[in-house]
Length: 280
Image 1 (cartoon, helix red, strand yellow):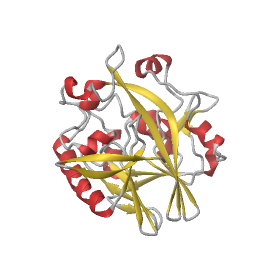
Image 2 (cartoon, one colour; image 1 turned 120 degrees about the vertical axis):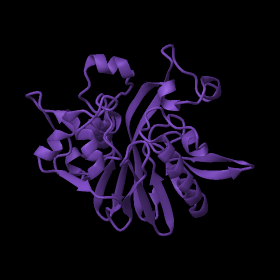
Image 3 (cartoon, one colour; image 1 turned 45 degrees about the vertical axis):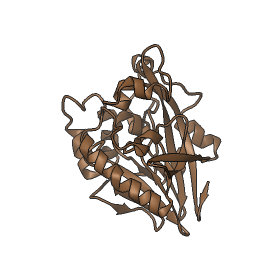
Image 4 (spheres, one colour; image 1 turned 90 degrees about the horizontal axis):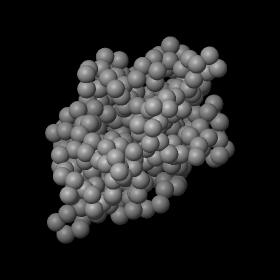
């Protein structure tokens, strides 16, 4: 999709399966099950929709999916389904891993940064994108490096430490411009320093939401917040502000995990809100 002068391309790392209760949080199953049927393990599909942004001569990749380092046990646990991974999809589009200039991680949960690194021939994790700077919020990095009992299972050192060792890590302090058309914007709630990516060109605007609203229902309904949100009340207020902005400015929403709707515009429908899907 061309947004003004910026090229936006969805790059899939596949689909994995997550417990429905984990995704929908306190929302009763009787309310969410009509939207999408869970499997026999009570899981729902989660897309791994990464985004390639071509702006100002830069190849900018937002999030990197689960990557290629998962053990067979982990693969079975998450039910990862894909024909090829993120790097393979990029190559299919004509881009080598070395072509990526910047990787932006919305946050450092394993399903968003697992592809940051890959194993070399000695079985050691190294950065997947050898020329890229990896842009991460400083507070998110701190939380990932010093996890607690609740977050330790998703903040994995092998996805993080090689970036620091190679000198490719760039830590951000709040909202940060990337190019004249792209900027990182902190959208607190899912984690303390979760960030989304805003693209603006020739009067048009889009936002890659990450996990501030990973499915369309999460932006349509303020109370629908995942069980994994560290600060769910902050998520609600972040989404409230986003709702006002995207309605007023006609902002294209890009969803990272929605397996049915990759992008769309938020519309007022009577007393409620509804995402009108568009192709990306």
